[in-house]
Image (cartoon, rainbow, N blue to C red):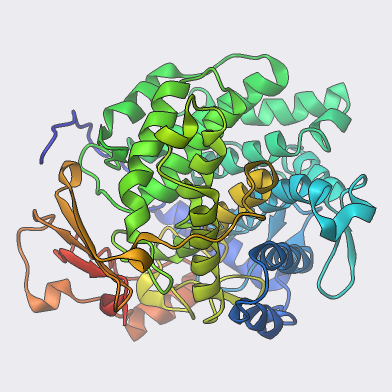
Length: 509
């Protein structure tokens, strides 16, 4: 089923087409990284993996431990008053400093969400008032002060950790959305404690996004998130409703969005579109509640069938974000309470949402998906074939988006205390069609396998060679290490003409 969406020419993105000046800047920042970064922090890797292999442990306790694991490593890697964090791993095509910004921007939403979690949870009753987190090694971290320090350093032009001037098509536009979200989630602990001058400083940095252009796809959601947060915290209304209408133009029905006029239908629906729409609804419940709730519910009604206790039928790019696959189910669970006759309208229960979160985290983390304090650049261990060139060492922290929603909303949705309910493939065989994306979904209970089959071609020219996952050449590996810029092959299997995807993930091995 093809729905035509008006297309715009793709702009020339500086990081994708670097001139000599930018190549020198990338090389320079790579040298700075070499002298700034700290040793890889593996102190808790084995213990965390063992914890997630123990299915008798509650998922609440496991998520609490995962947060402490992340916080402890972030404290180790952080630089310049927590404004940046240099994690080990393969570089992106951005500068190493932008990669380090991701080390903060993609981590502090977890810390901010934990502040909500620890107010109610039994694990932190004694320190709930001050937001003190005790790491796995017994270190005490004041989370509000860490988040506050990051914002005051990152938005201060005279501070070494300044996040810098924003420009059109800049990766920092993407990161500004996670930063704004973290500020909004933690507002009771951080924003409300800032002086008027500090608030102006932070606000002025975020206001840079308003006149800037982005790539014409899911990126429209990033400035929208910033603008709604600024409006919520300050009353300044620069919300760009044209960007939001463009996002709605990408909606083809059934809760599925095309990622741009000529983009894919892939997992960005789960951890990109619906995750961001959930937060727009949380920040401003009057924004477009009917559409956001209805599209989320329609999406989850089919998407829930993709999930299995052992693996997911991955298709599209950014496979390293795999730990976020349950995010839409958790988000819809939180929205349920705001729906009229919610038990009739919502396709998800707290028991199934908990099962989806628990199985996805346990399967991947239990098989080594967290290393050196961060999600690995792969599915389990490191795998350069699955690391897109826009992904850096900390990019995989988008994998924590399901964790962020769970920590933020789990107590009020009954997630943690719910009676466990099975996933669809654990109940019976099934076969369903999703006409809006030309896909069939087949589940087999006996094998626990789900297969997604696309019934139309993404790529016209195919051969066994073009369909395979390519390995980075030795030449490009050495060039990447020398220059500090990603030089990896593009391995989006949808774009290569693969039409069948199994939760056994055979294509990836």
